Length: 195
Image 1 (tube, rainbow, N blue to C red):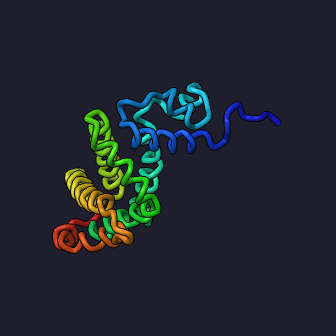
Image 2: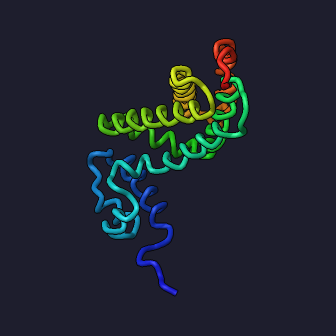
Image 3: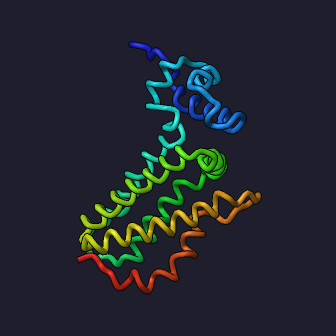
């Protein structure tokens, strides 16, 4: 049996080391060599796991989008936009819920660096386009799908940032925040139904 040349948990160790170092010294002051050293691996191992230093903060997001798109795709058949949006956003919120502290630390780092904020916005634009395509595939008109994706993303982003900023011992769960925010949109959304 061939043994791996780097520890199996190196990705997680690198991500933890990076977050700790970014918090301690600021994003711009930390090098990849420092991250690798803190994680107990080489810089070469870092580049096997991450494309660059920024990706350490955003890599896990790539795991969330496919799950969100799967929720939008199932089950098939007619569904009103409000129900579909609630189901998708709540499922995403439930997946993110256990990472509250980590996401709060990560957002504090992103907020201190213009390049990271730009990368976050670019990621959000990609997500919105992918969600719009998934809604179109569900049978929504392209214009409606684009609008629904934008509205859903705006609602989620607002509630996510409020949840992340909540440093109380027992913050209101993200899924509850999403459910509470949606009723004001339901009247508009329910008028738009997939064919």
